[in-house]
Length: 625
Picture 1 (cartoon, rainbow, N blue to C red):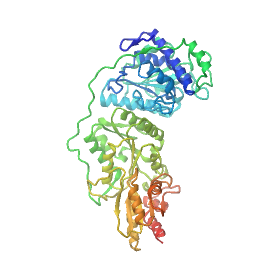
Picture 2 (cartoon, rainbow, N blue to C red; picture 1 turned 90 degrees about the horizontal axis):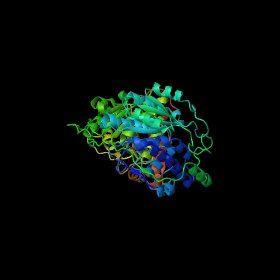
Picture 3 (cartoon, rainbow, N blue to C red; picture 1 turned 180 degrees about the vertical axis):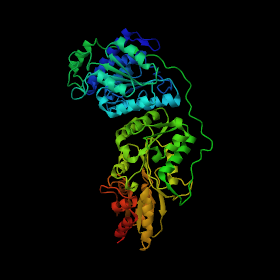
Picture 4 (cartoon, rainbow, N blue to C red; picture 1 turned 180 degrees about the horizontal axis):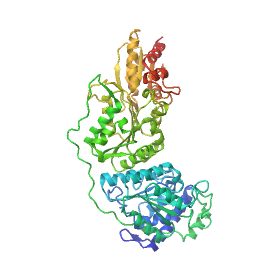
């Protein structure tokens, strides 16, 4: 029998039947697939059944409606439960649930991804769904000003992740009463009991300390769950809400209830039959909860008049980080969807210029780089164009969030300043020497490293419409402007600054080392050596054709200099390109920061690392004999 109740309030007896169906379908799908997490799904089934049928305001036929609430499974391994919900609301068929889960080429992947239109962000790397939810809630409260709520199902194991507490801290700071975290406290993690077990008082003290309104509930009492969801969704004081639900892992099947050793294990077919029988058999309910309030489609702010891109005179000394701030203001003036975030270093990254100009579109994340990238992800989900900046070295802390952003398919614009040994006296803790490799490895990423203010402006403008994860590396020091205003810098291109028909060697640099390459070319000219100089401002995608042509013209003699460790940076990108498309003969000298730096001036450290003009010239002389 099929029950359809798309609009009316669902009674709790029907909710109980829905919860049983969700448990049964979680078992059926995972047993059919031979993998999955049925017991983790069963513990939260009562919570989700009550939420979806009575509280989640959602138009399942229009998942992109701006009025919809948002449901995020931070506890992404409970995907059987989520996909069972999708079957229960009629957007996924029984056949797809039973034959498409965890199968190659199918959309019901092991952990949820936005290949499904009802999924906002990819989850499964624990500690990320709630931080992403902060970004969605920021958009709803401050940018769209819409009444949707962001409901996030969390696992108790992931409450050991610091990112969860960063999320609650920032949600409290920004008074995100539209964010409700539901924590499934089932006591058991992957290898045994969790850190706090069923100690809801300890969880509550921690969540309250971070500024949340906290509610505790028996996670299998539908009346109590219904009441607490109602209370949590009421925003009387601007605080986020945390619901701590005491549940039993594997609830509903006596053979596994609260028993260790069943995490991430499907039931064998005979066991699944017993479980389904104990739960009352297969059901075919089709139930939809309340529809969202209809509101007008939000519109971004209109472009500001006179939002011209900044211009600089050739030879003028300007730091690329300063040009980033200038360009961001201009790009933000042209597009009301551009927003900016920073990790409390905006007076160094120069994101503060945007903050002063467009304070309503700037979000300070303080020293919480994971939350900064997660908030940017959530904002991107809502159609905004976030630029997130900090010192390049500190983005390493947020790397898991960056790679998950790629899995989510969002467009993020990351900016890392103070890169390399060039920064000088601050020492190695502040020197990003791994960032190019890190960002190059992200699927579909774009990696840009401008050498002057003009190219920085052009690349910031390009990033605003570049899909996927894009990264701009900026330099601390001020260096001469090399290009006239308006010079084009397409992503994937490069610039040849010096060349002739009789070049002996090619010098390749980016950012600070391009200036060193230009000085090295002058030194080589004193030795009657003609050097071609290439500005490889687009590290990924790289201009392989220009590199190959230069290698051919200079008999395969190439010197690459980078303010980065040798592994995975500019030198690796150039080598990969030349090996794929370059000449048969190749003499490649790669100069990079091979040792562990200390403090000193930028000039001293670049000389120590062997990436200054003198070392570049020496490497070129060695290649030319």
